[in-house]
Figure 1: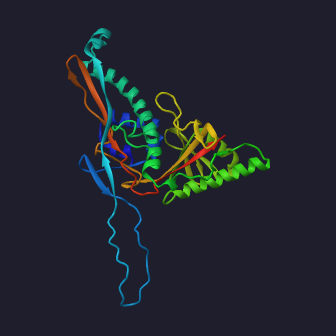
Figure 2: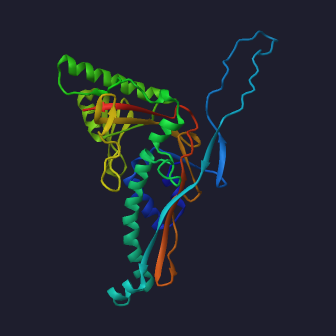
Figure 3: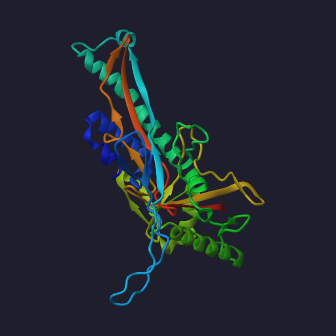
Length: 326
């Protein structure tokens, strides 16, 4: 299930927060979540069996006995959120409109904070989905980049653009055309590197623009939810990585590949299904918005999400194509 589907059981305040988060974290339209009882546990991986199919004659048994024990992937919930507060003195200072219900005044003041925080929560999530790292903090979950480098085979980081990356130049001369063709072939290889084919590619928006220029016949654009334009390459959606809460690009052209210093970017590929490929664990309520309570001189409302990416269920759930230059 998608996170907004799991989070649909709350009231209007929760629905408002979930909607805002979705607008700011477009990866949520492709990532699937599951719920499972308990705080921390191991689940069976969805990797391939080690033996091949064989032929047998009528009346014979198969000769190869597979005592294969499925590998396991580990999940433990991580908690992220915020306590939103409004001081009673603030409400007293601004005064209540004539005849206003004090509870409505509290709800209005917390509502402003809740909407502001929901925007930040969406941007936070988009950043963590790409760049989250337990090496940075054990309280985080692993994002796509760390999951590829630490939890997927090295072959899932493609070298199709060469040891020093590739400049995907504009133009019609032979050099530019060769680079463009090599890039398109590498992009096809990236899609195929994911088991079952990538469901979405995540990249810097400038790369999407360049691709639609050099491969116009293979690209199409539709209007998705929230009026968002969705560009696809051979049917696979291309998702702009976007920006974090601070305004920094999430997949910038600042990476080094070989001798190409601080001018490369990476394209990420993903497949997600519930409890399969790259899937996230959460609670039955998903994003939870609690009712406000009075604590001392303040009214407090908590917005919280329990989430963990664990390990990919399949060792070809994700892939990366580093070394893109424009």
